[in-house]
Length: 405
Image 1: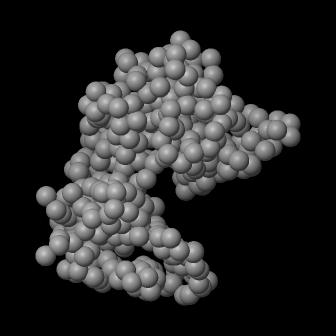
Image 2: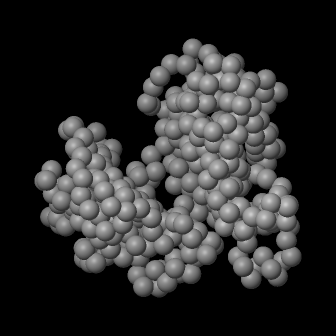
């Protein structure tokens, strides 16, 4: 009997569920194949919608009421079943769930049981916007298909190898330990996947390669990966720290919070919303989409120009810092929406950094492509690469390995 070889990946947010069904073995080229993908949105908000795309087929959409996550997963199951891919079929090996915060305990994916659920619940104060939604997705999937292993894959897991001097903040040790305040890092599935793919692009094993990964989307983070192990990352206790992002400030003097409370009379939740939702590119120029920012730069808009320059300055600062952390850098890999598609961001980020061995070839950098590729000239000491991320594939790969080995 052929063993179950499919994994359903669920990314449950507070008001949406993204899903993908992947076939992990038995494909023509031996590589995992994406059978279908979709999104159910506006959960609990009225006017819900599901968008579904089968492999080789046309995207289809329909409106429906989605009062809760159970209704969202039922809608996804209906779409999959309509393509002959029912998620309760015996060939489903696991359901892989993205969980944003795993704290220090979860360093690897785990099969979910009651103890795991309790621990994820305990971590809610560290990720109040994400972990509750992730839990809702897991509990719903368990109830709908109790015979299939549910696997939690954590955004923070790849960063648990960061050494203590990099992970600790210089706070009172008792307070930090009592409240679990330290650097955790996020986007871990992306950084793990991209660092491995970058090593393969260089024709080397991950253990032989030092890589700086720049995950640049609406959320953005950098990591320093030495021999396949993360040794530093830009996001910290929360996804707010580090690079300039679409709506998040990134690094900021913590005293700004006290000043806003004292002088502007802002409450903690107001400052939280300011730093997470009305800062970054959006705060600087009113747009969080890099494509729109660049369009405005081309039109001579000075606010957009400043926003772009602040964004690039922060990138360059982290490139220099992580070069110092690693000592030797074999490659810098750009990934995610901005990193993969904005050639001007890549060029500006490494411009003038010849001293670090960084340069891009204009023709290679501007050439479109969806495959991993080197965009640096042959003479460059450090490779610069564009490596499309695939967090869903990474989650599926980790989940499948856990339940089949």
